[in-house]
Length: 90
Image (cartoon, rainbow, N blue to C red):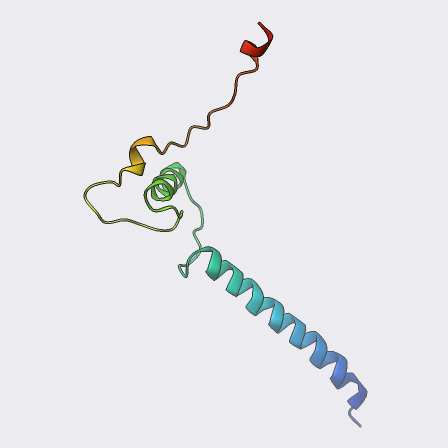
């Protein structure tokens, strides 16, 4: 039974695209997580610690080991300040 050589080129193209896509997704996830493994099944504690790390270091995956927080931490808050439109109409 002869082998259909004309099917090798499409098979190679499809296999190559799957490989390129897989490596691309892996690179994007690694870059997003700063080279650390992805976090799964996070609870409230993990989310709050990520917010704290974001405030301390500027990145959600970065961690600081200093015993004293930087000066920006005093005024850095997760609360967003919204302009009140109520005072404009009264």
